[in-house]
Image (cartoon, rainbow, N blue to C red; front, side, top):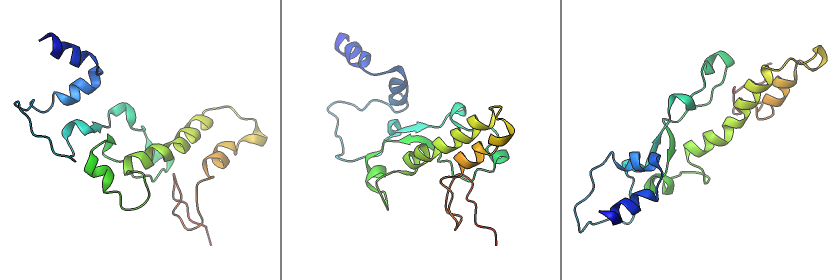
Length: 137
C-alpha cells in the first residue's frame, strides 16, 4: 500500500483523475507498444473556450480535446508535425491578441492597431486565420 501511495504522489491530481477513468488492469498486465488510451485525451473545459467566438468573426475549427497525447493519434498526423490540438494552440495566440487589444482605449490615430495586429496571419485566398478573410474584388 505504501508503494502505491508513493507512486500516486508522483503525478498531479489532474493526471490521477484522468487515470481513474479506466479500471486498473489486473497483474501481470499486458501493455501494447503503441496505444491511444482514455487517459491520453485531455478534455477542453469551459475555461478553454472563447465566449462569443462567433461575435468576433473567428473561423478557427476548435478541436474537441484540449490535448490528445495518444501515441497512435500523434503518429497519424497526415501533414506536418502538429496535431490539430497543437495547431489550434499555436494559432490561438492571435485570437488572444485581438481580444486583448480590442479592450484597450487606443487614441483615434491608433484605433486600427487591434485589426492590424490581428490580421497578420490572414491570406488573400481566405486560408489564413483567425477570420479566414478573402480579398475583396
